[in-house]
Length: 581
Image (cartoon, rainbow, N blue to C red; front, side, top):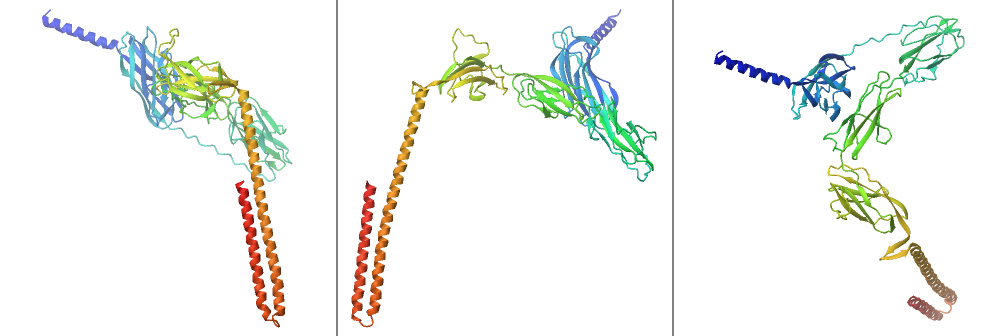
């Protein structure tokens, strides 16, 4: 064998070994069926699977995308390959993706294909939709976490329009004079537009005067005309265990002149709940994010018109729509139930849970059992270094502080768990005498609230309180306050009475002065009238007397003015003396 031939054979063997080595490390993410068709409005399930025929794998993740304008996810359920999940399966109908991540223990999985997820889609528009992976990882069970993913599968879906079913037209019925139609009603299904979860149907009809017979039928055709065979004209009938769907009761009456037109009564029955569904939890950034979004959707083959309600942890059900972004949640495990209720009142529950990673609830290590009225409360506790501690009394916040700022050095005999520090908090709240509860929670650096601590109970004493460093009985303080209030009230009454007396006295003096002045004016007026009358009588014959009369008048006026001025001065002086007193 020549040297060149040996070199060529050796190179061929090496190349074959390299190729064989690459084949051993091949794994795929697949979606099936890879080609199918759907009608708009219908749903179909697709399986996401992992194929690793020649190499054991133990973990994988992927992101499957779809056109959101043509397809919508109605549900995602887990397959049997992964026994634990590093990323819970979730989807976004607005962004058009389904993502997942999980694994299984050693020895892993080797095979040509095993399901990871089952994704159910609803077709919403015509056209062609492609399901494809945009990212993914399959890790070998080799202790090194080698990525052996080499191939992505895909699926092509042809979306067809719904077939248009022609609406059947009623057969015209000849109208016969003097043949009124019966009126139809139902005690079990009174509204023809509503759906009912009742399979037993009670129907009634009226019996107009002159009616000699009746014929009726109960079927799922909207325009049936009953035959001419007479039925029992009892005015009512019961149909039990009627199948779900839309039914019609047709009735017409027989008269001497002939048959009346047929009256049709619609009955809608739906006794089945909506389809099973699994709500999806979306936490952007993982479990450290306290804001969680829930996505859910299901279908109903009967009445439709599904409405959803949510009960989170111990809260009652409240109406929601998908997607529903929950308010900021506290750290810990949270369980929820999404209830889908159709138009007939049938309901189906989808349950789930999620975890918020955060600091544990703080632990209260020292809380006084008794506190004096208006006294200071000192609380010690344990919390994660750097967390914000919120202390509450009877459900109301009493203080908020950084655990690091209130850190104290523990007693050497007191064991502190790793990662925690001992803090101390002082507060002087205004509390009524009696029992009270104190609790605490923490907020970590991500803004996640911890659960509340175990509450501690203490009693505020009402028998005594501390003032200026002295312990004083409460009843003594109350008595002192009562006495002070009594004396202040009495003083106020005395001052008020003195003021009222002064006002009355002052009013009396002014009234008397005014009366005396009026008397003087009346005297002057009387004197003037007398003088004027006398002057007029003697004016003609005794002109010489006129001047004397005038002088007398002037004299009287001057005297009156003098008396008035003296009286006013007297009253003013008396008032001044009283005010000085």
